[in-house]
Image 1 (cartoon, rainbow, N blue to C red):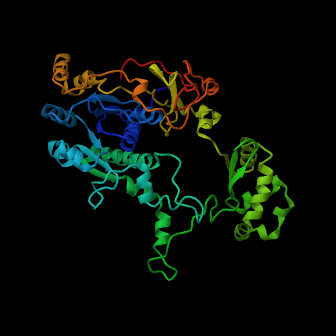
Image 2: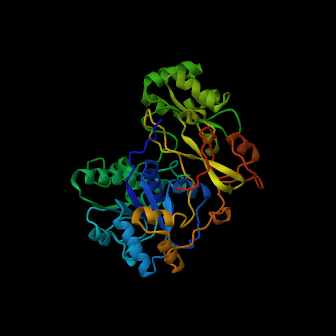
Image 3: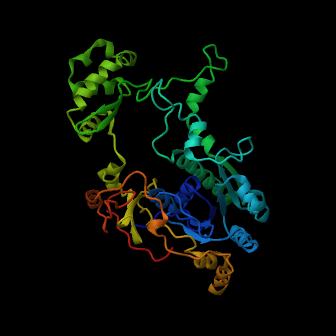
Length: 455
């Protein structure tokens, strides 16, 4: 089948670090855009392999020393050849290099420029640095997770705010490209991670702003843990096996009747439980009966039995479970990316492909991450028409960094723990696991790819 690449021909130049903008440009690269990262020479990589590999796939890299006049001039030439230029540094960084949005838009008015920051501009926090955990807290998320009385709790993933803002960035850039296609006009997009989090908490924010008499100042909504004010039973229940669980969410009386019939517990036939209000009132007793049933079955078996009867349920998966999930395998969601050299003892790692699946078309193949400057000659020839002699001169002058291999020791080991040899076997990877470590992400190798020799 033909690969789904609706953004073929779109050029994106990105000055990016960490996760949030890299997540957005990875999504655009997956859709066929020509994404080129500008990195500084000899940058020390500080991301885990799962994060670095997952957000840097399908992109080319050029290594430019922006401290030099010629380096900044080269970056401006690349910007003039691009459709989109983005960065996720604090505003003063790009301003110091003369690559701020105002300068770029003056250079090329039809250019789409994105400034993605922690808190957005203007405002007293406009120049403050940010990472996902701090933005999630400042945006109110941590006070919405967990049960009443608990300390504020983080989302388990360290990149929730980054990925969320990255998706908003993708949406904004696609909209700007569509607008320019119709009108020829460019855009300057100012997007913040902070507002992305607040936007998700909209209902709680609005509830907290109202009092019982309709005036402002209603107070903070209570945290409900695994329960929900509109569903009962609703929760996480134990299943057979060590630390295994199943999630169940009953949304209406029909689903309640189906669950009650399946479990067969006489207590659940009580007339007081016929309504949502009654079930919420006696939620603890219902939970005991449901847990007694789920604990005698595996999480997958319990979820399957409930789903067959129209009750929303799902196994509570660990991260490693997802890579082996047959449903993901059937959709081809994980794609194996092979490397020129082993990472963490394996010569390939499966990664998540783009979420949208165009029916009748294939997801594009994924290319491994590129070392800093690995595509200097290719990009500068393709975008600017520079020959190898000129690229070599700039490299010798220090304007361009020396391209080098992306070695395992350049990337911090994934803190989520190593995979053992048995898990590597289940994933279908090859290589020589060292000290039990064989990679930082997983997935079935049912979508083979070949080692790539270029972008």
